[in-house]
Every structure is written in structure tokens, then in C-alpha cells.
Image 1 (tube, rainbow, N blue to C red):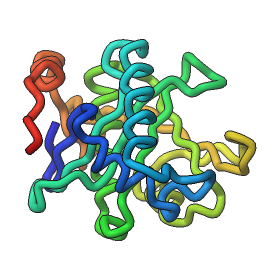
Image 2 (cartoon, one colour):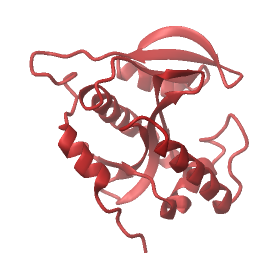
Image 3 (cartoon, rainbow, N blue to C red):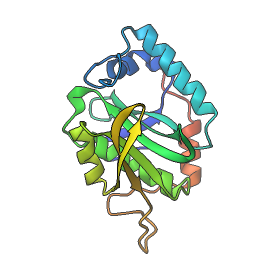
Image 4 (cartoon, rainbow, N blue to C red):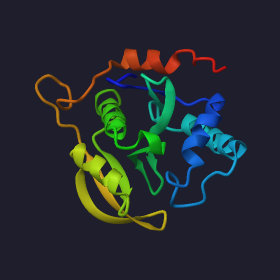
Length: 196
């Protein structure tokens, strides 16, 4: 899936070094110990890929690539919420040098649109730590409904919800992008690029 500036594609184990740039950085993974080695990140990525195979069709984790720089700058996901398995959670993480450019909003908007238009979801939640000012702003830019404080992973968060807001055109909102189910399946089933 592509947006104006980004390409979203499934992760593969060959991406472990790029995955480590995200999950090995304490500025990104500040709520716990960041991964200390690429090997540790590869193990975490393998677990995510395995868990993704057990999710409902269409849910999973995607690498976010900056099309202009041709490099991975983060990740975005739709997955069952651990303590509410029938609820789908949106999340994203970006390397610090990608912060402040609107990439999180752009990637999250694309995944929300995909969730509503392709998967037919009627609600997607985002859980944002109360001290994560940047992500709180992203939730605001996405017009997510603030449903109040929640405890998530033993930490104080705010729960946000998104619901489809379909206009006559069938596209969720002015920034929405629509993919047909066939287009999305073609994207998901394409051969991954070989990394050198």
C-alpha cells in the first residue's frame, strides 16, 4: 500500500536490522528495556511474524518505508487488543529522525482506511501513554474520539476510538485512501524485495 510519501509492506526477517533501529532505541521503546542487539530484535520480529499468522485475515504488522529515502522509518499495526480480543488496536512506532514530519499520521490514516474499507471493521482503538505528547497529537489529527484514561500494560494511557465516517463517495474522509479487496490481496501476496 502506498500513500503520498510512504510505502507500507509486511515485515520479513531480513528486515531485522531496520527493525532494531526502531526497537533498539530507548527514545522509541521508553516503557521498557529496548532490544540491546540485532539478534534480540530478530527474535522479537520473528515472534511478531508468527503471531501475525494467527490473526484474522488482513490484520498484522507493516514496515513503513519513506519512498523518497527508500528506507524503513517505522512500523504500523492492526492487531487484536490483548485483553479485548474482539477489539482491533492500531499502533505505530517511528525512528526519532522521522518524528515531526507527519509520517505517523499518514501511515495511521492509511491503515485506518484499510481497516474500515477493506476489512470492514466498525471500530479501531489506539492506546496512547499519557506522557507521549507526539502520539496524543497524532490521535487528535486523526480525529480519534478520546474515550478517557485506561491502564495498559501497567501504565497510564488514554484510549482513543475510530469509527468509519463514510461520505457518499464511500471513502472514509478527505485524506482516506481506498483499496479494493483484490488490490490488497495482490499487495499482501507479492514477492518481498530482496535486501542486499
